[in-house]
Length: 446
Image 1 (cartoon, rainbow, N blue to C red):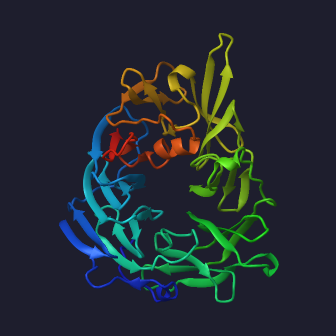
Image 2 (cartoon, rainbow, N blue to C red):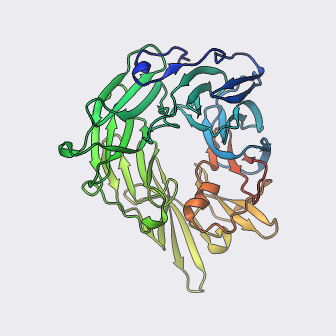
Image 3 (cartoon, rainbow, N blue to C red):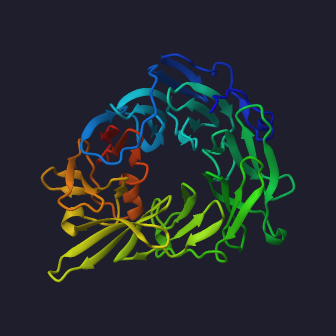
């Protein structure tokens, strides 16, 4: 897509302004230090021109380790076409995943920065203290600076700036005549849209935005009204027109077994499907087709002997456990479509995988499973070929991964799951998770 540096008139209605003087476009390589939103910005670019990379179908070794700043904390990993963007607590780093080399970095020192990547991966948005910066994901070049004030109570935003699409921002806020107004403001000078899109049934009260996420076919706004069930409405990002709407309690039931253990329930998209994360990250019993607005399932397996582990764009990963005659347990990891038909299988035993309930990463040709190694006194990664016979391969990790003392499946997945144990173009990345206050580190498996 074209790189865009203009700003539309629709931005004014969304209370988004052009950046202040001194916050212009950067080009070339080197380091620039300046102030933005009351924070010192350190922006470095190598000038390297990276090519787009393929996501590995399997891995066989740990090839490199990235080490971050001593005052930094790694929040998560985002895939981009040329490799990966690492989200730090105060900014972002663009990584060449073939070597682990930093290609660019953008840090607002002393801030708590949120970050998001556009659906096609070409832009990275960093939001802190009421300002949002748009960066080219491959080069780190700054293309736009916006002031959004950081005000608002909705959750349809990166620190209330908006959901970052390929072409602009989607925002939600109080409408002039009540309800919630959802707006789209393009990066360029094309017109956007704004409308009173969301209202409570019968006009009883104002809706409260609880969540929002992008799909390949639109933006889904999750909202609630006092005394009524949660509602999902999908809007076309090109026009703002409603595509479909679903209501919890009418169109699907939330089958969370232990809702009292969850601080919140959120939806996440995997391709053209969305999962209600009522078990852990990318895991839940309710799955929705976001193109047609149909519930694909509200009862994915959640029994101890048959448990969904991760929702995928075209199905889900599950584990089926069975006690054998010799008293040992056999574990069958299965990729199934949403009808339950098994597509790929790994058969192993409890001694080969350790815990079965978290940490699995399915690739095209293999299943990766971290497990504790007494020999290494650390986690290692076992590599199981789909439907393959023979022992698994093992990769020793050059970073410390210690999950001792974590009892919550959600917290384990945050430490070593989607966004932290993550396939990206060029490599599989594993975040270090050590006790104390360690330097942030990431290992690259290739």
